[in-house]
Length: 146
Image 1 (cartoon, one colour):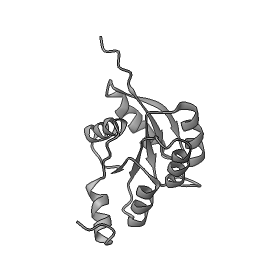
Image 2 (cartoon, helix red, strand yellow):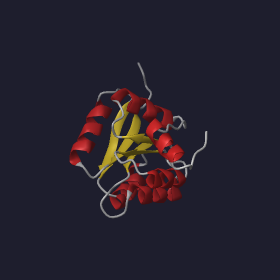
Image 3 (cartoon, one colour):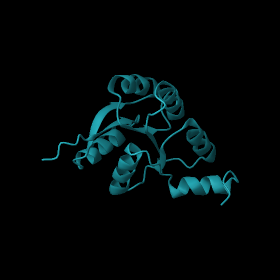
Image 4 (cartoon, rainbow, N blue to C red):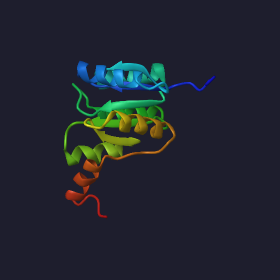
């Protein structure tokens, strides 16, 4: 019998369908579970403090204060928080800001189900992932030289 507890994942996104899809994705894997959902930065910070999830999936564009603000505030309170930024936008300034805020990983929302699950597991273990599109954005703006 496997006694290992599932990785508890908090979902932060202002779109109901996205949260629902992410929740369904988590339900597909025995080692992942939803630790709660938030629709904006303020509720994300409060939910994080209450639930202390193992990993947080953070949308960057939220009503009011953005996901970068929420990430920064959560990491101020818990420097060991493992946050994965998820976005559908290709904005190099946003990429730079979220990486500076201290996310563990940065992915586009078009990521596949298995890849997202692997990224969650890797983040839980302390290993980060950056989407190739995000690296290209930084390279295109001369923020990253390879």
